[in-house]
Amino acid sequence: MIRRASQAGIEKFVIVVGYRSDLIRNWFDGRSSSVRELRGNSEYHKSNGISALQAKDKIHENFLL
Image (cartoon, rainbow, N blue to C red; front, side):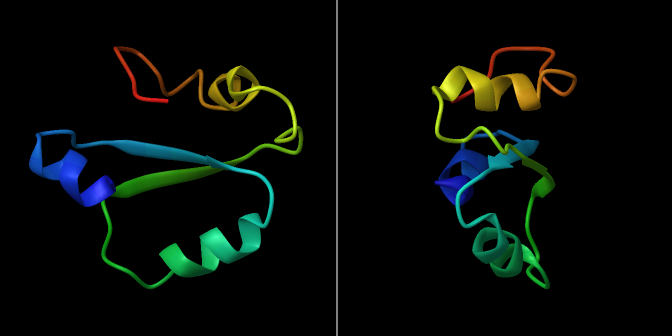
């Protein structure tokens, strides 16, 4: 999904991680990636809006959730 979004012209990615975030962080470590930032969300079991709030200081335009 990130690769295709990059091909479509999306340049910045902020990924909010929760459950098993260690696996996701490890996967991105050491990879050449356009992901600029991973944010944690300890309340990942709640609705997606809670995750979006974790990145609110990075969201200044339309975004994909």
